Image (tube, rainbow over all chains, first blue to last red; front, side, top):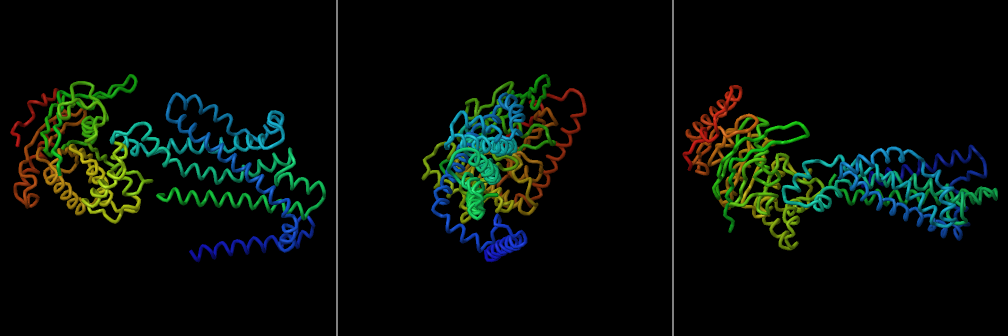
Length: 243
Length: 274
């Protein structure tokens, strides 16, 4: 435990030192030093905090929607050979398309508020979770299924006692990785349309040539990613202790 | 225990696996009656269809010919009171010891409190009390075997089917687990059918030893082994004789497989009984 805390302290010190040196070397208002950043963050709190929550809401809602749709569909598709044969090529073709290119269409369809952003991020998350869970279902040990069937278990029992717990680690892994992608997509969506959220805040500061303010927005967005990543990491360790 | 064993009958049972155009015969014309409370060991060459026979008895497979009856009823699907311990034990790695032990009861929708009580009792019967919260990967090989057994006990099974349950443990542990199986069987009086590769294990645990031929499995010999459960049985001279008898029956069945026209299983069956 102590060595773990020590590891984090070292990591933070390392990053701050690297940042400080870079900031001094670059010597530009676009990259303030850590000391200046604290000040910049403090003076922008009144706008940053509500924008932080707006962005957090969009990402979390999308992660939930994407996951809640992907998990049952992945489970269903892989349970039936016919469905899997039908869906595998569809998935294969759609998965590599960067969903972010759909943003303009979504903006036309859903307007400029939360909806197009949530739809876009959900789509991104959906495919990532879908592919991960699909692979995990295929890797479910046959012996576990046999054991449940031998006990007279129904399809629902197989789902409850085998498929769900066996694929849960894959869900969390894909979510942890998905957080990074989700925030990237969020940034683009907020930067392109609307007048709320951290992405908007960053681009607005940029166009006002207010670099310290822009940097405060970047830090807030990074913080959002860090917090979500840590939450999923913690949940994963809590819920998949058997590994 | 209140439990008394179930009767298991194979009546001219045969099984053919069909995979598209291919037909693979796994079992031919098996007729055996396992009396209530009897302990039967099944031995034969690798891949001869012993596991298939167990799955037929468990109701996970249905015979293509003939009938498989438990207590006179055809087993069309897994029966509530039948417990099957598969070769790899079938423990779920994501469930704790207690959750694994209670699984059979949970699937049978036994009320939770009652199920947990049964599971805890079963765990203490096999000496696993105190490990309820552990995960299977944290247990030793022997403890995992005991857990698989506890799951069957928690269900109060009257028919216990075991597919080489002790194949993964070392010799000394194996003997002590065989004693656990023997004690439980004597205490509870359930019917049991044990598939094994080990002649000694068959002779130590089976009141009857069924010797199977190579695939497709046919019954080659039905050897009575009435001294099972007597004190000092493993160390007696008769034990060694019995092992030799099984060994030669096995060798004979393996040898015949290369010859043409295997004889009818009924003719080969030894009708001495108990």
